[in-house]
Image (tube, rainbow, N blue to C red; front, top):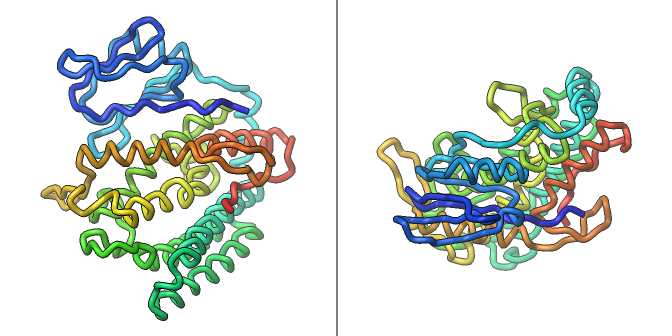
Length: 346
């Protein structure tokens, strides 16, 4: 099993990274603030204006450590990576599968089924943990969402059209997000959720969701490239220039587990408040610097949680699940597995 590697997040503006032996060293205003052996890293993610020496960039490329540059609010800007890895025959099988309507629809259906079942688990855990304290109308609304997610997951599995699968996924998303505010238990009015908004997020909950989805996309893309798949060629998400469609596909299954549940935990435990966010003149809402660091720590901690993978029947960590799913997808495309088994969280 692949070893769980850490991701180095650099959030301090004008920080400077350089190589010292086998280490990546972070300096701020000429003072060393951190030092990490590169062989223990799976990636380096820099937020905002952060500098890096060519020597460190070259060392990361040789070691297979991807460097990602994001804007201050988490918007993807660029990636630095080495030569394309993986078996060319695997990528050819991946490309051929996208031209097969039946194969594409089946893969999209499995991905959406995994996502909807994991969303249902988020809903069921809320009912288990807080159902007794919910008012009757709220409890019935959440329970009805549970039933509808079960129904849509069943319908997505047998669909023969990718367009139909996308329609089912959109229907389920409306249901799921319609009760998401009912899962928020804190009384902070500034942290209410009135519906999904993106590019830009228009409230703190959406800002937190979008930030975590960006981190998860990075992890899924790295996992796909590790096993030799092309992250730009997907099945559920349409191909567009610059879009990591396959990474977004794999991310769909893991959103409820690694992002949605963590969002609810951070808010319900009082680890984030409305004051931890700021609103730009344009209306875009972003995390403040200190809050962003807390979210990054919580995300890394969440990734270290252990579980028994439902398909391979081995213990792993949540952070390695993207790699496991990428491996299973590669095995399916090579013909080693009859079906792609989505990750279903228990």
